[in-house]
Structure formats: C-alpha cells, structure tokens
Length: 325
Image 1 (cartoon, rainbow, N blue to C red):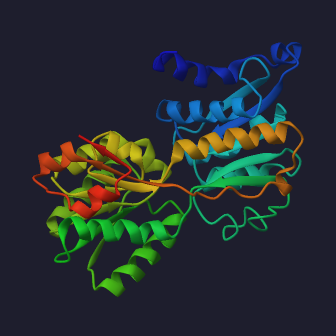
Image 2 (image 1 turned 90 degrees about the horizontal axis):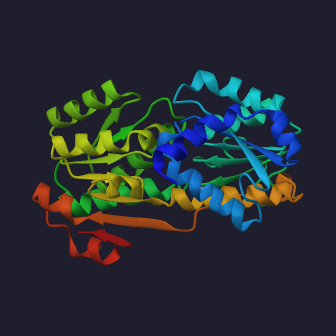
C-alpha cells in the first residue's frame, strides 16, 4: 500500500459506519494518538504487525477506529469520548502520557492498552509494574538512564570542554524528570549545561539561535512526542547550525541526524498490537505486566559526520547497532 493511501486509510477509518462494522461482527479497537497520521504510518504498521501476531487482522477480524489529535491536546478528551461512546471493545492510547491519562480518566470499564514515556507507576497510570490493576496496562519506552547515556555520548563526540545544550518541551511532564537527570549527571562530570525549551516550530528556531549565541559545543534533543512529529525540521535545524547533535530515536538518524540513542519505538508499537490482541482474547489489563524497554539502539550517520567535519570516536562506532554510510 502506498504511503498516501495508507494515511488516507488511517484518517478515514473514523468515518466508517458502525452499522457496517456490526454486520461484519468484528471487534472494534479505538486507537487514539495525539499526533498526526502522517507521522505515524510506520508505527501504525508495527502495531498492525503485532496485532496479526496475536491472531487479529484489521478489516478481517477487527475494525480499528482511528482518532488523531494533530498535536492539539485540547482535542484529546473529546476524541477519547467518541471512542467510549461507540463503544469500542478496547482502547489503544498512544502518543504520550497525556493520552494515556485522559483515556484512564474517561472510562473504568473499557480495557485500555497504552504507550507511556514516563515511569507508569510514578505518574499514577498503574499500581505496579507486575500487577497494573484497574482497566489499563501499558508498553513503556521510559528508561531514566537514557538521558545520562546521551550526555556521555555528546561528551565523547566533542570532548569535555565547553557547554552542551539540552532541548526539552516544557509542556511534557517528562521534561522535569529529564532535566533533573541531566543536571545530576552533568554535576558529577563538571559539565556546563545550557537548557533550551521549545513546544512549537517558532520556539525551535529560537532555541537553536540561542544555543549558537551561547556557544554550545553540542546539543542533546530530549525524548518528546512533539519532537517525534517534527523529525525532519529538527534534523534540518541541526544541519543548518552545524551543531553535533545526539537524538532520542533512530528515526532522527535515518533522517540525517548525527547520532541517536534510545528505545525502539516501532518495537513498542508492535508490543502494543500484541497486548491489544491478548485483551481481545480475554486477558485483563490488570493482569498484564507493563512491558519495559529491553533494547536500546545506537545509530550513527557517517554521512552527517562527514558534512560536519567530525571524526566520530572509534568507541562509538564499535558500539553502534547501525552505521549509516
């Protein structure tokens, strides 16, 4: 299926008549994401792959009602309400912690499988990792140690002289945890940190300009659903300002970013599909342990290193899971 046709399918599925669904006697999954269909084509396909592994095929055994927030958080509650009123047999809440929290607040009866970027116990999504309780379980991409690892990578690339900038989205509750982690790690390394904030494209432009004015030697981009939406824009800014940058996900490096290190988002969506299938088969979210990330990918783009005039340390190249040449 062509990308444009697939995006049309993701956006248009919401309009399928419920009567037609009932005639086909298929279960209904309500899929809510605060981002856009265009930015999630690969991830939705990974979700569908996991669903197939669990024994369900979209259009054959199950109907998926998609709802996309287009990065307008005010829409999230209403979109979830639409899925509750269908009613969906279960809800998949992806695209960030806010979506998961809104879904949990909207219903105590419909099973929910969520993707979360924070510690799910700390933010109150589940009672415990092994026994979530309630009607929600989740697949987590959160790993507190990733921020420190990215700082270490940045120092390997540019050395330990000069400041390193850290870009976060202040609208993301996770940003406070990430800032605390990088400040704690930086203090132990005597590493000066420049904190930058952006929650839209204009603020991204301003953050990069400020970083250059403050003579940062490197940049670390925080993990954030909004940044995942604008991968090409952030990679282009890093290229325009010729700043060595460590990104949170492989999608940035494949788009031209220098180095990325983080959990595999496609794998997380595949796990969402598997858990959705298990719920449809009768498993209760309360009894399904939270899925924690076990794989972290280090991706290096040598083409970008060459364009920046950087010779990446041998240690990074030897540890890389993938080198783009």
